[in-house]
Image (tube, rainbow, N blue to C red):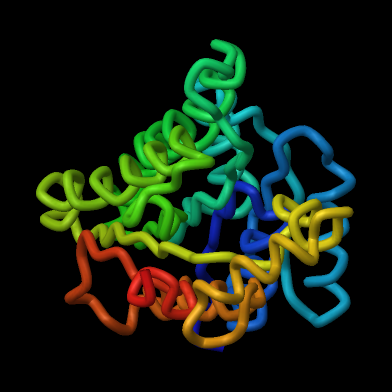
Length: 255
């Protein structure tokens, strides 16, 4: 229970990697603020799982495309649970954006959720962390932000920006005892890619991905990504700043 008496704020904590991370950090004693985009019931379901296991958590919602909502959320969490010692930004969207066939609305939605929200989540939590003498932040990048993706170029660009954001903020945050790092998952079994895994073309998609995946596991379980986040955020290793931990079943190395 190494995270007892510490608060973890998890954007996108109601499903996928965020949910797995909420459960993992709570199992280590953290009090977890589970944030969904708009459906409080989804966040509450995760809170109920944590409570059933003997942990502490509270459900919230926030539209991460709106800076005022992010700032209001952080202030509310600080009032309810105490200032966050840890923040994980796992909110994100993932869909194809073809050149010549992408609407401005699709562009804005992905850029705002994947990048703008991450930037202003960091912006909102760091003043309090500075006052408290430090903190730990993990942002979710992607292997697509390192190797690129012809089918998902905008998604890849937003995730590449997350990698560079972590590096670029180190000089401002590390002197205050704040660690900021990223994890870059490959294919991970989450609700975002259920159509790829379970849809009518799943067999073709899985076969193509299997051929490119050295480990033989096409989709990693989100619990393993959560374990990597825990490694970066639990405070035991203070020397890691601006790193991106690639967790992709060897996909990039195989490429």
